[in-house]
Length: 185
Image (cartoon, rainbow, N blue to C red):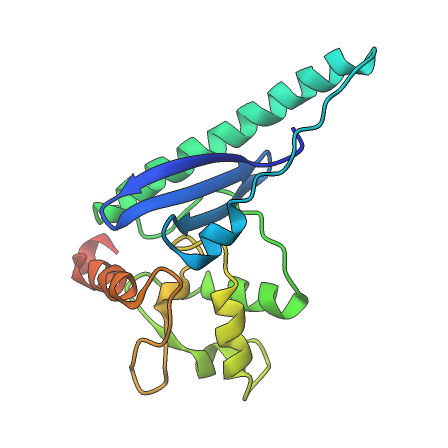
């Protein structure tokens, strides 16, 4: 398997395009977002010939099954999340970026369900006080929406800021999390 497997996942907030490798989910984005349209260009398939083809096909089948397992887990967890029954995702994630971007995304994973952090707070927390604009840029490069909760990052004054899936979805995601009973958090 030379590329990620993809699947469209239906949610109450729209269709999500999901992609997974044998190691985990590598993309989760609303199908109508700009980032998703840019990522939709399919990679060409590689043809194998000769005696290594059968071995490669067996390895590919094993890798494909693992990727399918991650996609199914993501779909189950997203369904639970949208029902208000899941506070923390467990599906394995695969993301690549600059060291700064990865630091931002790891910090986003620590923002508790139902809570928010400002771009300024995130910058300070990763040891880059004053880099809130760069945090915003890294936040916008997040390719695993909802699971890496970029929707939980807001402006210092409480305004929503930006969101690749649209501000109305960001507001709805934050409302969904805030409405959940405290006992189930």
